[in-house]
Image 1 (cartoon, rainbow, N blue to C red):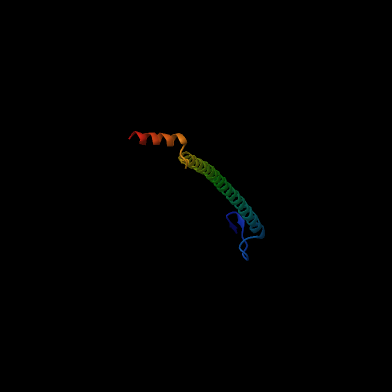
Image 2 (cartoon, one colour; image 1 turned 90 degrees about the horizontal axis):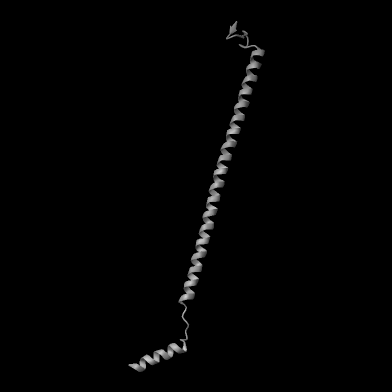
Length: 105
């Protein structure tokens, strides 16, 4: 008997040669699918790694930018402290000028 062009035996249903050929073809297909799956997984991992690397670089740039801004704000604050600093001892001329105004009144 022939089953789709293949020898069929009454005892086992399929001859040894047909079984071995089908088994080899099936193993090759499984191996090929496994290789494709591994390649696809590698591509996905690479894409994610590159994406994460880009995000990390963007975050590092943002941190650097924020550090610069903080440094600028601190220096402005120090400048403001220095410009607002008033000498506790008034100058001699200011003292004399104030006395002269009181003398006019």
